[in-house]
Length: 493
Image (cartoon, rainbow, N blue to C red; front, side, top):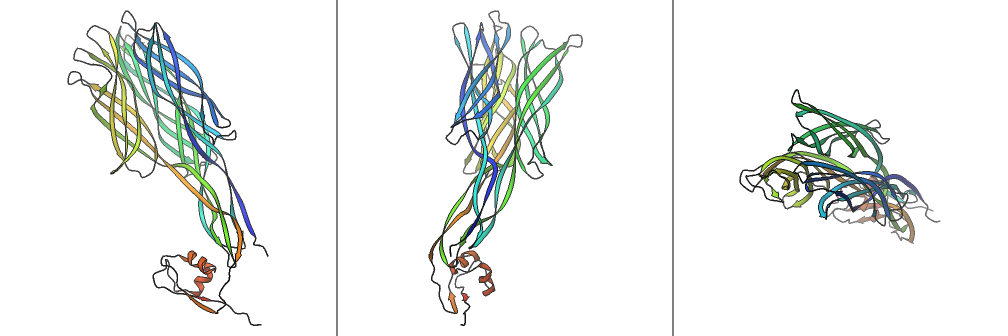
């Protein structure tokens, strides 16, 4: 009689892969003299998966602060639409892509009377789709059942508004602003994903006729997204981007101050990871015949613990141009940071560089922009691979020695551990040759030291409960020199 088996099929939704892409987006500014500072931001418009690629489109917003021929400080802004693609052979139309855009670098070049600003746009693409695998559930076999965890993903997205109003010294015009987002907390409860964080708002303004001044604000925000898989205890990964930022300055010359109003529109992409536990079969055997097992399953990805830290870093900054005592340091703008997680003999560290643009007024009355960078290395307590995000704020610069700039910055670090669960279950069993068993009523077996109950049962071809009942004094794992007694029932005809 043929051996019978029963199987079940698991169907879930989860992260199936990831890929990256880069594209250069360029914008032309005419009749611009000396560029002091250039900034670019990006917003995603849409994304869709095809065969072997994800096609996405977005908008890039460019702004430059420059000095004209009369040494007046001016500003210019433009927007550019772009499209690009990320390629990977694992991508197919049924995949759901999540595309996260960032500006990795901004460069400026002059060609004739025009200035070209180029933004190198990076895209991190997370791929989600159905996860399906078949696994053994029962039949004419002795089964080793173990709980096996599978991560299922629940996607949620939405938007929220954040506003801020603050007073500054009297300024005439907002020249440039830049925003960086940090998520400080993400929690799940009763179908709701709640995200909290803050936006670092950097403002460069014109004071008087030709002086520059910079301001910084941390604008808090809270957003709640409906999500089917959001339950207390579930982990979540949230990314927030600024879709739109509108700043307005209202000077009050009588009081000698200015009110600045900021209106921010934030896009929130969240993913909640639910741990589903299966009663899976990880091994099986037959007391009557040899069995060839086939295994199936896959790897599930998700978010683990989140590590947050705040560090103040200081040191000698590297400069892109010369600065001396005849210069006046007027403003620090476009503060930002980039970092990676690295391992050394002493553990893991976050290493990166904090950057900003230093705006300087020369002795001849002309402005110039000097890029400064401050490297840092911060130890962190984690054993896992992590996605690192860092927000730089409170950046300052001082010239204590001629030609040298001492810089300080506050870093808000967020490390999201990457959780991976491998699923390996028996998916099929094929009957092989018959096993000839001993016909004696009692036999003594010498097991291998270190074997557990399952390994011993499989070697004897007996169910674990029968082996335990026959040898109640056995201790596992097996010690060297232990003996196992096997009893066999005899049929009397």
